Length: 158
Image 1 (cartoon, rainbow, N blue to C red):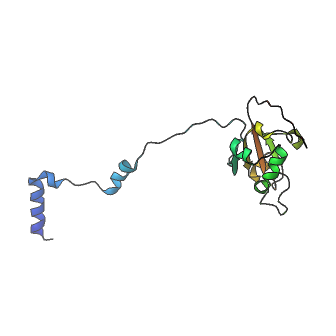
Image 2 (cartoon, one colour):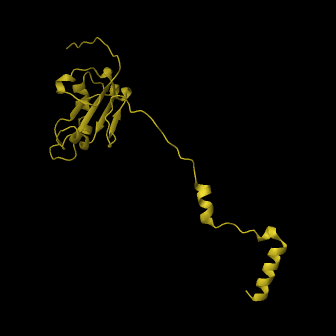
Image 3 (cartoon, rainbow, N blue to C red):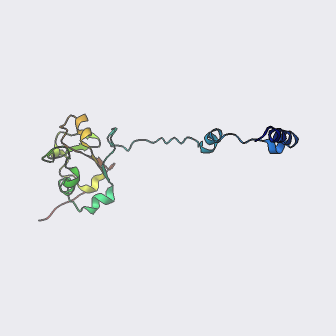
């Protein structure tokens, strides 16, 4: 571009201010165009769920629990044995740690005869959660969340 054409462009810009408007650089527009309002979601934890940094690996609702056709928690755990085996130890880690509404129980005998209809949700958690509850790192955690105010009369005939 010669000096003469540069002067001509400056004169045109002064004579026609609408053509002289410059667009701001792309990086100045980007924040306005890409800026979106911040969305904050606040929710309560599900009552009885485990308060942990590790999300459940498997969550079963009432319909999924019923689809297993189990008549007790023992049968349900047997059906879920593939999902509840540990991947960290050679022998599979053995029997999973069982929690009831996110809390430790004295033993599996406490929940083994519960009817599956009383369970609202089942969460299978990682081995890291077992460590938090004081169990060996080779065990998975199964948390049974019970329904509120459940009552039933049941029987088995053989």
